[in-house]
Image 1: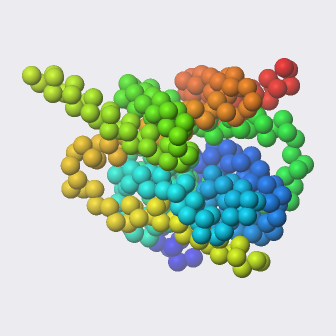
Image 2 (image 1 turned 180 degrees about the vertical axis):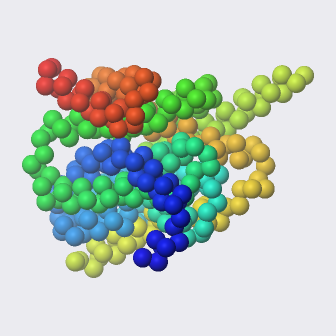
Image 3 (image 1 turned 120 degrees about the horizontal axis):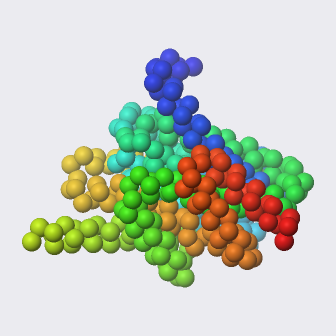
Length: 240
Length: 101
């Protein structure tokens, strides 16, 4: 327990707050992970392969895609390349959290970087600034535990879950995103509404041509560029 | 465990971790121009918009299912309910709707 000795009480406190903040993600991941475990079994993976994939990859969309590619008989190179493409958007989130988080040690950044899914990023980055390393780690670990644990549950017991529950739980992650957005809207007002609106509209358009991962990334980049452009124009007009 | 499968899983893990890790280890944004730092700091709100829409419409065969669940989430969040209550509330609402309709 070498790392426990170096943690001071403030860090432990932030870690605990991260765990608490991550509980809704753990809930949201439950149906997605259970379904993944179930499908992995149907695709012919063993229980340990399904759980190992959730442990090492920790990326929902990419794991689902890998299953469907395996079912179609795709090779290792194709599956790994497709995973890289789908998860490339996290580069942007990692760069953004770098700007919003405390600097922290390299080791702690390398640790929480592993957990940076869309949801862990969304919860962590809307926390008070500067975002603490241990807070992100806490959010990430509870989300990760749910993802890995419920992959196993889905593999061995998924077919026993009532359809009513899993169908209703499909709303969970969207409800989480909405629950993160609304307090920011109340606190920072129109800035947040405009950015979210631009992101949503651009994503709806890009999804007509692009896969989900690229669409979200392109929509986000375009939204922040367009917003900055409009913002600067208004400031300049105000000065003249 | 099948060796090819093990290779695929490890490969997927590596290519997923790299984009999550690299900016955190290599970027030094302290001396970047203001506009680029502002843009990076605004990413979360634009991402949230893109993550919600249009995906929320497709959680069920009928788009009204997602719209109703989303509306309940907006109301609960606006009233100041904690995250977990917003998530739980919209799940329960949709489960009840399914039982009734």
